[in-house]
Image (cartoon, rainbow, N blue to C red; front, side, top):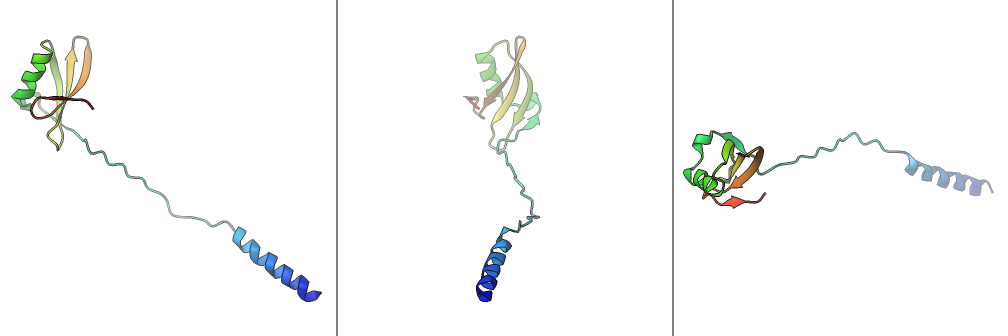
Length: 98
């Protein structure tokens, strides 16, 4: 009977070792990379094709700021009347949706 009680105590004791919480000291780091980072350029440095295309589509438009990314895509902040809109164009002056 002693052996049975001792065996039960050992089995139950060994099962309680698995219930001990484990501390994780490693932290998770998430990195987000945005591929469409634009750098600001002077409005005068815009290709003439883009400026002409904008004035053809919106004769009363006024370019406030201009940006370019590494794919040679342009982001324009354009004032149309009372509103300021963001427009995107490729290097050939074709408008893009983003």
